[in-house]
Structure formats: C-alpha cells, structure tokens
Image 1 (spheres, rainbow, N blue to C red):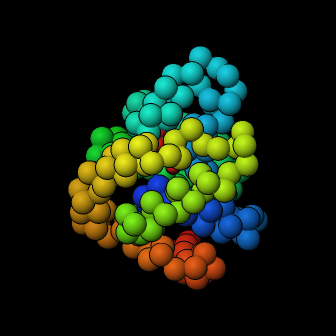
Image 2 (cartoon, rainbow, N blue to C red; image 1 turned 90 degrees about the horizontal axis):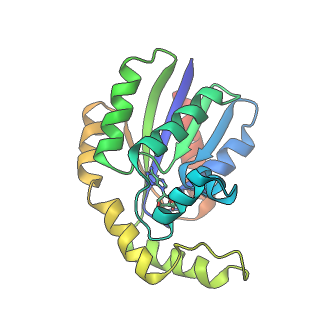
Length: 197
Ligand code: AMP
C-alpha cells in the first residue's frame, strides 16, 4: 500500500525544495517526485513527448491532463518506498477530479493529505524573479521570468479555492505557512508527514 502526500503551492512557494529535504532526511521510507521536474526530465531527454511538453512549460501553460496523470501515476506505482510525496499536483480541477476517480478504483494507493504551501503573490514574485537573477548562465528555467510568472500565478490561483474546498470536505487539506524560513517550514511539514503515516 502506497501512502501518498500531495503538495500544492504557488510558483516560488518552495514546495519542491521542502519535499526534497524531507525525502532526503527520511530516505529509508519516503520518496519525493516533483511534477515539474519529471516533466522537465522528459523535455531534457529530447523525446517527441518532451517536445510537446516543452511547448506548454515554456509558456507557463499547464501540460495536458493525460500526460500529467500518466507521469504521476507511473511515478507512484514505480516508487521504491511506500510513502510518496508529489509536489505540483493537482494544478487544476480536472486533474483533481481525475485523480479522485482513479483512486476510487485503486486499492494500492491511499491519499493521506494534500499540503498547501501558502505564500502571498508578493513573496512568490520576489522568490521567482530572484531565482531567475541568481541562476548561472545556461541554468535558467525558461519559465522564470516576469511575463510567464504572471501567467503561472494566475493558472495557480484560478482553481485554488475549488481545490481547497474539495480537500477540506474530505478532511485532507493541511495548510502550511511557507513565508517563513526554510528550516521552520521543513520542520513543520516533516513532523506532519511523519505523524500521518
Ligand atoms: P513547477 O516546477 O512546479 O513550477 O512547474 C513548472 C511547469 O511544469 C508548470 O508551469 C507547468 O507548465 C508544468 N507543470 C508542472 N506541474 C503540472 C501539473 N500538475 N499539470 C500541468 N502542468 C504542470
């Protein structure tokens, strides 16, 4: 039985960094995948699928449902540990509903919690544009720029309330204030995950 935690958060919320640290510290039982990283890995492979994915990522648009669902379901199923943290999913109401539908017929995966790493738009903007400015030449993400940031933020915010309500009704939503220091955020998130498994 796989125990699944999802982490959602605005671009710049630090969700990938938080989850990577938690998985690294608990590598005997927890594994972490970032939806964005898995999609970027496919782009880096140079495959046809990667080219399709890149055409969405570089504009800050959501990658189509089927591609994202296949990516995360295969990551969960192939995960070498029983506790799986995935960040960056769901990012739309249709993704949320599709996962819910799949989980109903999937006895091997239990969704334990959806963690929202919450930051204001101002903090998100500052972190993303700071990350862009600090990146070494050639290491810059194609989507870390002002114009794409605005669109990514809107795409994140538009379905957020419906996603929050859906998981609140199922008593699965956990909100974490992600404007604090990395250490404090990671400590709270790690304690929450460990107390829930
Ligand atoms: P991130 O690394 O989480 O900031 O994601 C970077 C980009 O990957 C997003 O702007 C989307 O283009 C794509 N992406 C990541 N997660 C998803 C998702 N759940 N659904 C669709 N596209 C996604």
